[in-house]
Structures are given as structure tokens and as C-alpha cells.
Length: 185
Image 1: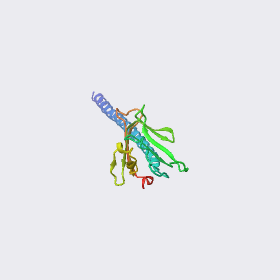
Image 2 (image 1 turned 90 degrees about the vertical axis):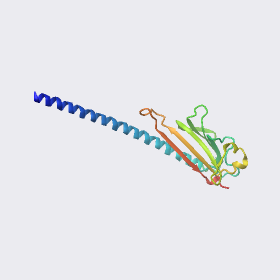
Image 3 (image 1 turned 45 degrees about the vertical axis):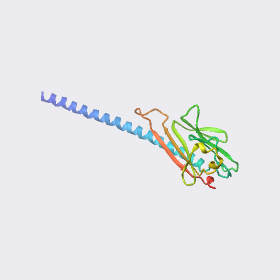
């Protein structure tokens, strides 16, 4: 009888141990998937930042006068002139959220649009003068104030566009201030 009780007790303890091992395996799998999703979001952020860095540092390059397209500029859109591709011709570049899909950030280069990122939750643009003071967007149509723009701040937040993990989505944030040489007097 004692042997049977030892076997039952051993099976019970083995069952508890096996459940803990399976639970640990599930927890490790969840954290691995979560870490991979986070790495993908950060990788997306880095590729977007490279595109924005390339474009925003070319604002006003080889262009005299007003370098910002004050008609299209707002708190959630920006447009400018400059020789972005360095071929000697003036290019027009703009970034904006689409009107029909406000989570899609688009880049328009010389009239042709391409999607930069989907899943954007916030895209704001600020404009600074030479000492870092913010220039109100409403005053940008004034050519005198548009000539004072020396810096552009870009704030971008987005979520992963795939399936939410455990009911939560991975978010990434990008914020940078550009003071391109083309905006200097």
C-alpha cells in the first residue's frame, strides 16, 4: 500500500512540475514574440527616420527666396522646395496624412505620391525661427514670416499594422528637429 501511495504522490508532483515547465515555455514564447514585434517597430522607425533625414536636410537646397510652400503647410503637413536628388532641377516635396485614410503618411515628390507608413496615430509639424521660437502655422502664409523659418520639427507616432499582441499594439515614436543649411539666410 505504501508503494502505491508513493507512486501516486510522485505522479502528482511530476504533474505539477510538468505544468510549470509548460507554463514557462508559454511565457518564453510570448516574450520572444513581443520582443520581435518591438524590434520590427523600431526597425520601421529607423527606416522612416532615414527617409525623413534625407529629405528634410535638403529643404531649400539650391533655392533662393521662400523655400517653404506656405499654401500646403499646416500643423499636420509640410511642403518645400529644394534640389533633393541633386540633379540641378528644383524639386517639390511634401509629407501629409491622407484625407481619406488619416493613418497613412504619404510623401509626394514632384507630383508622384508614395506611402511612407501606415498606422500613423500622430503626425505634427512645427516651424522655428533662428533662435528656436515656434512660428505659428497660421502666420506662415505671410512671406516675411515664411522667410524666417530656420527649422522644422517633425513628430511622428505609429502603431504596428499587424495583429495586436495580447490585446495591445506596439507603438514607436519619432521626434526630430531639422535645421537645414538651405534655410539659412
